[in-house]
Length: 77
Image (tube, rainbow, N blue to C red; front, side, top):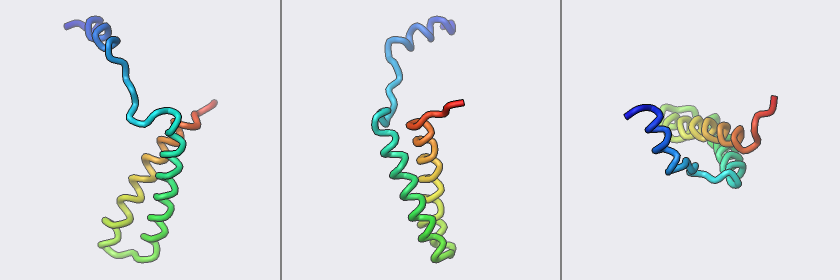
């Protein structure tokens, strides 16, 4: 199968994102707020158990929240 055939076959099923464009700001803001809260809780009790409980979810929420906020607001140069 050539690249042109793959390109033509893919046009029949366009990509639809999991989170709609209209709700990306809400999802991004909620994730960033959750990351802020979890980071504060992690700062109160810095033990090995709190790394798995607060640290890792906080970093994931911040990463995904930042990406969703960039997608929602847009990057203008």
